[in-house]
Length: 293
Image (tube, rainbow, N blue to C red):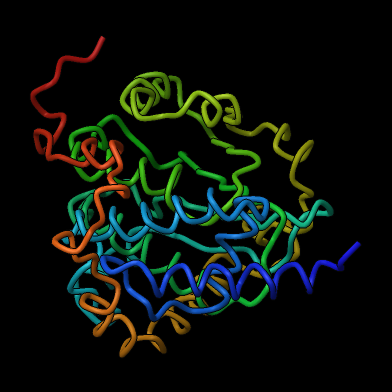
């Protein structure tokens, strides 16, 4: 049997050849990103092709999330002032990459949902194009300790839907687990907002953990977590600063990426239409007017 490296090289050549023959898609795509698409599709070329097309199509249909991205912009710096978003340096024994996302304050006056999603995707792009190691899976940990009911009023429905489609169906990752820690008593209300956008198989991956519990450690070894969580990976602030530096080092890439990764819909072959794109159409801006049970 051919070894994994031979398979990767063969399929990488095939996917690059296919990409160059797609008139509507960008052709300058990092090799490591293409390898991630192949890996997440379990080296099914057809599945990888569909995911690549959706990846760029979603981005082109969400300019508020993927355009005018400057790591030095005040709105991006503001998001990092009130949130912690960080890939952890060490993986699990299953070779899963672990992430922590949390609000670092209960004061949401400086929090803008669209800016937060944009920043999240900038950090994701940094990792997907710079980190040469392709993990076997990904595990996000959402710490909801500082999430209050006031957060519901901050959610932008259109951005949430695009975030959900992109992260579940277009990003070149293999989601293995989703953990929500320090879950408050009203977590059900927040989950009810997200549930309509969750794929069934993703919903099954979500585990909720009560405050001050150690149930997370059944899946995630405590030692790979930041010191803030009793681990040995360094502090949240230290890890976050390292990733901010990496993101800022890609500033030129971000400033020129608007056009480089754009989809030209006028050149799209009729055989490449994707019904999922219809889900991206704008919805009412926020949940402020919605009644919650």
